[in-house]
Length: 98
Image 1 (cartoon, rainbow, N blue to C red):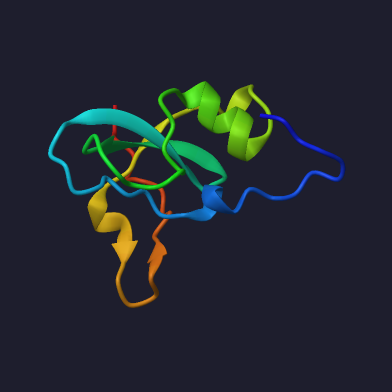
Image 2: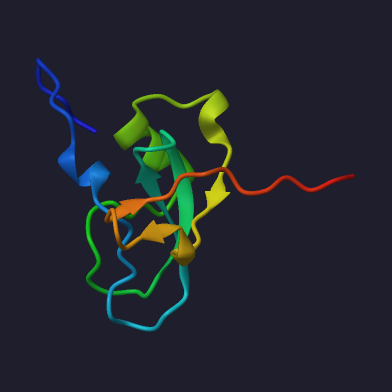
């Protein structure tokens, strides 16, 4: 990412993940501003938006600004979209008992 001083926030990092109208199954990553993490989603292969990264590292470098401890990936579930508030529900997934 090239950034000129002062660095401005990348607004596309706040877009919802958009799989696009095509039907391919391409694993990708998007930045979730609520969790401040990059999360997996399935991209259909065409259109969509700029909040769509081939690698977790690219997503973090672009939208989080660093690479390190935040490399954990969470899967995005379509059910996490709240139609009423029009926001992503970033509640953590239930933990499994060992």
